[in-house]
Image 1: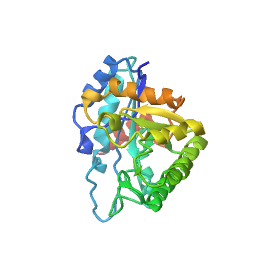
Image 2: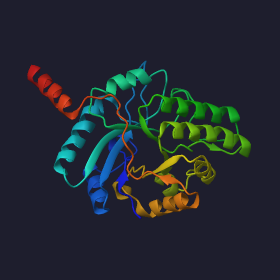
Image 3: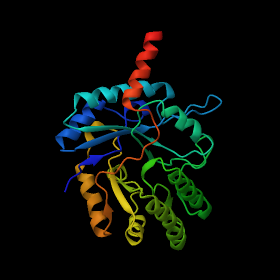
Image 4: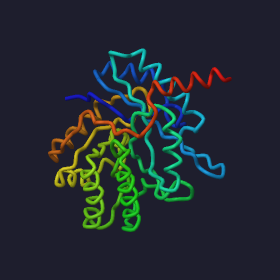
Amino acid sequence: MGMISNLHAHTVRCRHASGTEREYVENALAAGLKTYGFSDHAPYPFPNGYVSGFRMACAQQEDYVDTLLALREEYKGQLDLKIGYEAEYYPKFFPDFLAMIRAYPIDYLILGQHFIDNEIGAPYSGQTTDQEALLRRYVDQVSEGLDTGVFTYVAHPDLMNFVGESAVFDKLYGRLIETAKKHGAPLEINLLGIRDHRAYPHERFFALCGEIGAPVVIGCDAHQAEVAVDQPSCETALCIVEKYKLELVENPVLRPVGAVTEEEYRRAKAAQEEKS
């Protein structure tokens, strides 16, 4: 069984990906996918001139959206192309973030919590740690993000490599999994982690998913066009699904983020062009 859908792919705007959007789309078609979503690292309106080193700039949103809208039209009937973002839940800045992206026809958000609190002088979530307090902060923030109701699923939910007591791992990660189950938000088996031999996907985490009965999704997390689909890593992910008897969601239902429609966006853009 191969993939029919992927909602986790990046573009060069995040400054650590390569390949054109067209190359990703062509590779998705060649692999037989029916739905393909771009979810580049979301722009964030940070204060005091702070510039993030791993996400697109706010000024790049229009180019991102317009490029993907054009491809959506070109490949209509061949591929259902979705426009999304991978975003962190940064409580202090999240309302401004939502207000900003809602001016564009964004189809979905996935929650990728790369930092705790926010990334300005805060701990990276992907570190190896035995500190219970750090894992608790990560789980709290992901859970609060899910409570907003705007995230379709959680990318690499097992990002923090907790190597402390097993009972703490089970208690805290188990709470994150229970929260995701409550919201019906799938938890991602991340193919980048597989192909790069990272600490995730963590088998203990997905064993807990099986015990709790939480849904999962497979995400390519593609940063290069040649792994736009990544069937070899997908086979490994499917082995995890089978091993722990996981409920695999092949084509997740997108949660609306309150954004304008494509038609509303085009009308607003046309009106702005007339004025200028």
